[in-house]
Length: 138
Ligand SMILES: [Zn+2]
Image (tube, protein in one colour):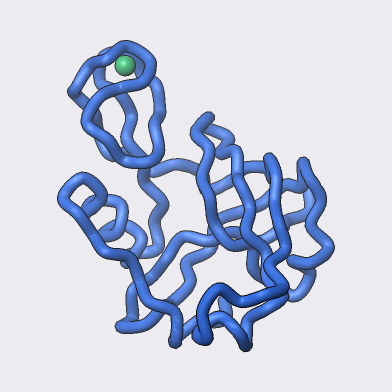
């Protein structure tokens, strides 16, 4: 997937460190509650399903569908100027949680709500890899 070498990577905090470590290896992991089995994203201490605080970082399929999206035509900062127009989407993972990410690929501007997508790992400044998505057929 085309890198965005001028776009900064994340500020990694302790709650999300396992997420970014897995992304560096090309794996998408999210927290799964050890008490009730609910998947959750963004990373956080307590389960939204049962309030439990035990969770395991669990590799997920990386497959999902577009819940909603927007096309950015006006770059928010100069670093994004060469990338516009580009797509920001809300992705409903097959496992349940919703993620915000860029939709990449040559056909990204043809995105429609409900499109199936799959995760890819895009390189950012400093070599950080960020989970992003591309449209897929079927
Ligand atoms: Zn739970």
